[in-house]
Length: 98
Image (tube, rainbow, N blue to C red; front, top):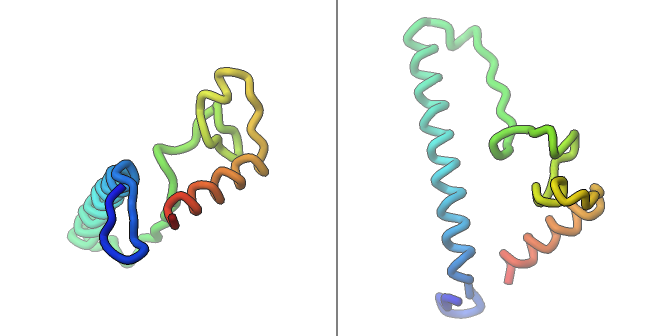
């Protein structure tokens, strides 16, 4: 646990997780910037629509239409409902707000 004063305390693992996420986002932004530059150079930027979907590495056969919180649940035949996933999202939010 790292204490930055006041009520701001962050687990070291949270810092590493956030740093990893930041690296992923910055890499994506860099690649989009390269695409925009190439389209602009070709004169095709004005004719281009961008659709951005925030997600991980994409969909998988295991996750189905709603995805999975943990991939191992599929391989161990443990069903994940949407309600279970929403509970996990709330848990994650609470963990980062501690």
